[in-house]
Image 1: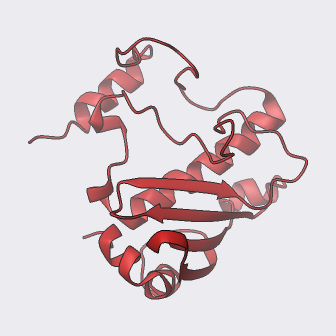
Image 2 (image 1 turned 135 degrees about the vertical axis):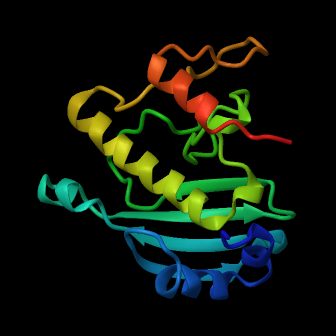
Image 3 (image 1 turned 120 degrees about the vertical axis):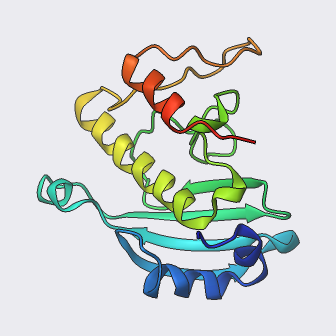
Amino acid sequence: MAYPLSRALDQPAEASRYLLRHADLYGVAEATGRTGWRGAALLDLTLLPLPALARAGYPPERVRLVIMPPGERIHAYPRSSRGRRFKHRNPGLGDLCLQYDRDDPALRWLPEDGLEPLITLIHRHLMFEEAWRRTKVWPCEDAPHGDSTDAPYRIRTPHMQRERHRWVRRC
């Protein structure tokens, strides 16, 4: 069972220790946690690239995760981004655009999924950003920015269509 976001909100320092010592999660090299403004949990993380990507020169990534009470809104801010371009970063706030809110829930992280899947989503996103900086190609299907329709993004690749069906959330 994943570490609950409500627990990370209540005890961010404990959550950071859990990520370092007990989570079955690759690449968390450093983690600190504290309570911030309006009760938000602030987790500062250093995430190592996968070994093959480290050999290719991908850097460790520093990121601040902000979990807003009651745990339904999160923001991930790259902390080692000075002078680096990002393809999927929200204008204004500067946090990472991690997912497309109108996608099928099977393709999104939801708060009840817990802390480890969220860290994995952030970690993967930062590696994808570095891949994009190097190749100008996003390494998987990605949703548009700034569209004005209320409809879910139409999944275009057969692989993602299969994944949506594979990971469907049953209520």
